Image (cartoon, rainbow, N blue to C red; front, side):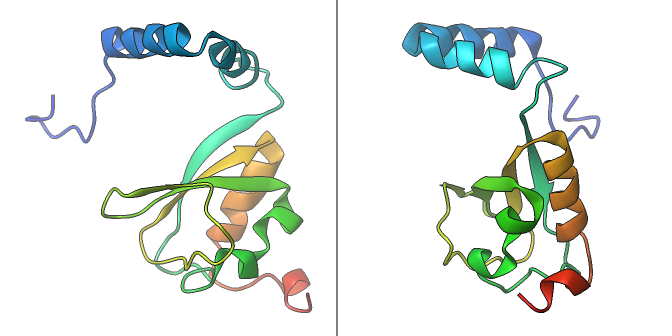
Length: 129
């Protein structure tokens, strides 16, 4: 499939092996993930959001964006273009071009975070804070 142009492949057998491995190492953690993230009607969701080149948050520190205050969703990880992953980034992280945020929150919070990140200009309500 990769030779035909696919960017990535999801293998059911690999996914099953990873979940069985996770259960054997940390059984309690798997129960939490099963209960909150994998259910269709869950209150908590997790998603990866790419920061576009035109976003107003580029070249700002994470704390300057105040995403948590306005969207009620948290950035729990950042994947840089060089595939380096930063878990639980601090507020001094400088947001560059092509980074991807791993965001956790409610579906509405994540939707608002996407909208805010994909905006070209800083929203009016955030200009005076």
